[in-house]
Image 1 (cartoon, rainbow, N blue to C red):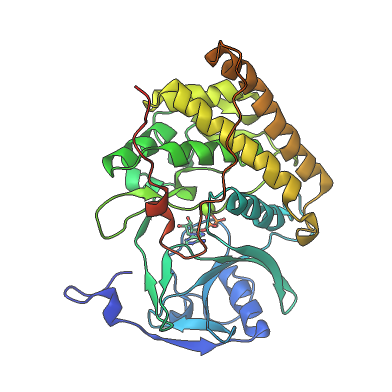
Image 2: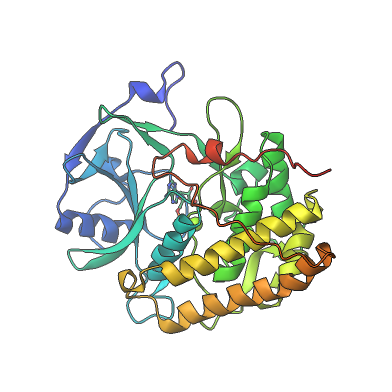
Length: 356
Ligand SMILES: Nc1ncnc2c1ncn2[C@@H]1O[C@H](COP(=O)(O)OP(=O)(O)O)[C@@H](O)[C@H]1O
Ligand SMILES: [Mg+2]
């Protein structure tokens, strides 16, 4: 939020105005330029970037949706669905499912569902960059996306995707985390997850950093993650993994290679990747698919197969690392995320590697 010099954003609390479903539908269509009325109205101004038309609303303690006027903080982001019948019409459905999976394995705190407002379909996601206090006041938490942190203008497609270039890169994000006193383990977990679910769109603007007041930097919860490989897409990863771009060709060992290029010890990388895949397999078994009716069987099967394939590719590496032949039981891990905004990053900061 930009405020005049000398003012803090807290000085500007603005106010909320209740909106009904019909008005939410109009706001969504206005954001897409598909409805009359002034666009860029003061009440719908938002600094949120991204390709998809979206609006920000606040859910009040009574469960009503509100427009945020004059700088009142929003609590949720609503993103319009692609056109019904288009090849990517299920993107918001697979996004809600992917966020459900990510939440189950502790990679996000975001709560997401698909809803219809006055006949207009949208995904509703809770904001992780908000802290709700018991007196009902919502505070903002500073986040910065990685393209911004790298100084890249992603309106230029040559700067948005890596595709063999030096930037953007996962390596640079790992460095940014280290500069902020965080180990890149969560980045490796997120990268493993994105590869397994076939999220081709994990570019630097879809990965963010949290800047809590103590000056540290940590990885933000996962957002804008979706399944893409079941659709007929080239399947190019927005950022290279171990120098590879074709997502279907990236292997489990490539993930280790990538993490080692960030300076992570091999055994540690292997443990992180194996545990993430293991947790994801369990999440895929346990997730309630009836809650995601817009996700086709083919999409689920594609993710299941890929998760298994990556785990199988890793198995020989794991065996070789344990020559005594003692089976290594991956410790089941409870989801570490908390539904409270703002706590995620600090809770996940990794301990130093116990291994030499
Ligand atoms: N749950 C969330 N909490 C806070 N900020 C978010 C959340 N989801 C998205 N954002 C921010 O909004 C931007 C746009 O949202 P995103 O879902 O990436 O939209 P698009 O599909 O248009 O890229 C993101 O780059 C991120 O900065
Ligand atoms: Mg995005």
